[in-house]
Image (cartoon, rainbow over the protein chains, first blue to last red):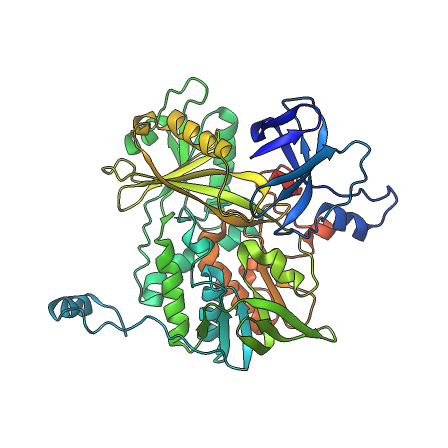
Length: 89
Length: 417
């Protein structure tokens, strides 16, 4: 699996740390159920999905990766910074 | 048909013409008391114990592929009861006791081999943790022995005791732990369930769960509508999709875990050995192949195959811990889809929808759990109360933060288990 970092170009998967689903973070004052939903519950899709990956051994950018969980194909990537997150949970 | 030594002899002398199929291939009936979704180890065991211990006679197990074609046939076959945290520890203790009587129970050779499992330690901190874990295991009535470096070396001479970075200082042995023949476990439970009247329906994919007024009514399948008073999920890595059909979202991400088998070599490893550093577990099968594995690949996957970095990591750890086996060629590798919960521990609970039950989140520990899980899940489905050994496998522990079972102490967070 190779991931295209928007800053560095196509790199080996080993350079990245994966966080999981790219989600919009609830407001600080959000209630228990909303935080539970954000932290734990997942759509867990068997399809293309948006995830957060961190280019740990490269430029240090957080990247939103659209990846297919069935084929492992990396479909597209963009910098997470400034992007409106909120893919499937 | 019962198996016995006498029967094997008789069939051997008469051309093996008297064997009959192990289970029927029934058409689905229009209605059942209980429909179990998933014909793997957990689903088949649940069907078996529902029929045997709770008197249910009208049960179906629905399997989208073939029986035992999922994770029960894709693991490293280790059976043990040396978990540490309350909740897990009593459950796996219960499960190991079920394993010990399983062959007589099922009249089926599951090749249960209590060869002993050893967790080796590499430093003083790990030794202290092993002492503590061992005491806890002994206190609950199971067996654990702390082995010194010399005692371990005599027992398992092939390990690299003098690795510069991770020297082996000793290990914690559980003699009652070991391995079992994974396929035979599925087949044995399937045969036992079938003999008690459970309909095992293969090539039957569930495509919808019918719920009316908060109560489950049945399932839509690729072989038609099946009505049911109770529906029980046992879909392993596909639990998320199965629950989505009931409008639920689970605290589960599906990940791929790889396993490996080397070419067959002469007997060199009598026990199951697991290493704390680099995380590796290895045993030698009866055919001589070394069966081993390591971490998850750590990204969401339904591919049932992994990537090269974790293959390399596993081989490097094998080479470091057992360099004598460095020239053994790798024969096969494969991946299984693990239903990972945030704390790495399972769920056996009500769904919150009347008549719908959950059995999921087995993470990387599902095989050893099979008899205990089937037993406990059947109890929950039949009585609507949790089995005494599985009271802490609650769905709501993530919401409340109470009763989390985070064995690795990394925090109850999705990408950390």
